[in-house]
Image (cartoon, rainbow, N blue to C red; front, side, top):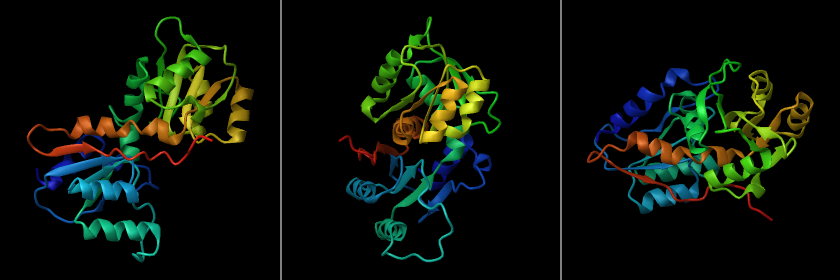
Length: 259
């Protein structure tokens, strides 16, 4: 497969012109305009991911989180990003990132999370003007929050001890809103949409307090937990039989450890 077809496939589903102005989706490093044989998908680039890509002879790494967020004025091997760039170029590995476009797009991270959780009638959360958030219904008559949280942990294959919850565990959850990654700013939007629970990551203390005052349950399942589904999702998009070999990075990128 020609390397340019990778970006064409992704951008047909998640156009670059839908990214937030602070984002930097697209090619981070592009070392060829020729054909490639193997693509690795990963949530983001770190030293272990690069090692795994080299070990597997990957020509391209496709990530959710951009390798380069801010303007790079100097590539210095002595800082983290500079070192990654040097190593990737040394081993001839290009990098493409699809961040906020893949959060927003049809079939992207947020739609995929709804599918993984088995929610019904998934749709855009109309009270969110940015297009990030989704909402859906728990099948049947709903579940107690404690049981629904157990279901989320099993569905995401994440130990629920990584979770933080604000609300009553016995509350019946029927309508759910969510935003993968860091989406505490949409708690009020979820309340206005009539959600019983809102799921996201990176919820701060005052966000949780505000949610309690609004009387909406909030589950912080963690940034990593809500977005690690990216790999299997983007693989299904890119996997074209006979054209290129797609492999999922098996490095555990959760930066937190249970103690």
